[in-house]
Length: 207
Length: 258
View 1 (tube, rainbow over the protein chains, first blue to last red):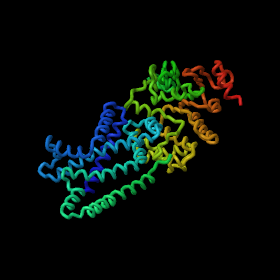
View 2 (tube, rainbow over the protein chains, first blue to last red; view 1 turned 180 degrees about the vertical axis):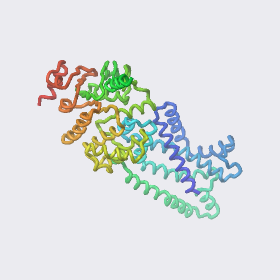
View 3 (cartoon, rainbow over the protein chains, first blue to last red; view 1 turned 30 degrees about the horizontal axis):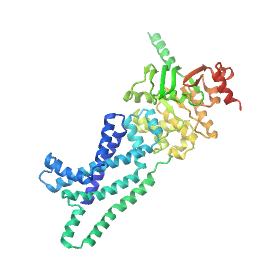
View 4 (cartoon, each protein chain N blue to C red; view 1 turned 30 degrees about the vertical axis):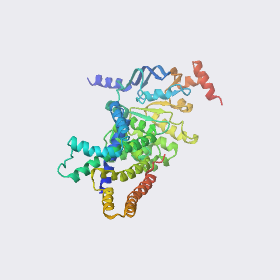
């Protein structure tokens, strides 16, 4: 469940984070304002609050159940993904934006000079180079995300932390069980970090 | 009837391609362009020279609206420069630009650099775009480097690729913004050679440069700028042997006598 939660949230937050970053560098003031406001609000709210809000606030008060009103487990999972995406995207956006700043202005100028539109030059020239520059920081964000999935336990999604809690209640082997789960997370995140570190070196744009 | 229409076409094809009318621009308190009037005819090669900070590069960059202007008008082929947007992108495709720092797309190969605009802007099909790109790379003498990345090329080679990239769009006019200023001395000539060839082929060119040799041999007209103004315009022979303004005399005495 932890892995599933991580993968769905990672894909979602990369897409949404990229869109946010595009908004923050766009020439349209309204979009820039929205992107800036979103990032500054969302990244300063504790994840627990966001997750609990997406369950209690969205589902119970506004009736947003993401098409799973009668299945509590599925609904919880979907809402947890939504909360994690909303939260992590703010960090993906900021990592990407710092990447965009590493791409020399001349690249965008050259792109515009051959007649590419703003969105074309962002998609074809600037973002591909920005992504390569921030593989390392993105690995950080993804590792944090993997560990943050444990917060989903707060709304009863049966991921690793929930499982651990149940086991500790039943077994009374606190230390051993804690160590096993900690080790489990290292096994999940270490390869991600190593793989992305290697990828970052391989893809680096030479100037 | 046919006579009239051909005469008309001729008038259009020999008329002014780029026209700047009382163009003004400020960078904060600095008045970088002051009341600039300049017209460039089809097929003409205009070299813009002057001390640094005189506004030459800014002038060059306003022509495809990489820099906006405060007042005045700029028309290209009879049409005024549009506002930011699709129209402007279309116009920029018709105006080739070569930068001081090359600005080749660093994550794409040389060949992809030259193909990109054709495919994404001109909607040429891939095979045709590649054919044209290879022909252009051969023409500027870097055909053998097609599959390398820009960082693997020398400065002179990169700049020639940049020229090929601009030519791939079949521009009406080419802007050169100090194309040889970032190059090692031994690579300057290979780039100037390509530009000379272009000039001989009848391309309309606006060249901001410090290469007086190029100005002398390739230009139809020399425009001398200082402090944001066009101080003098003349044929190269006349300008270099007999400049009229004191500012130009002073400038030439500093660069030619050593």
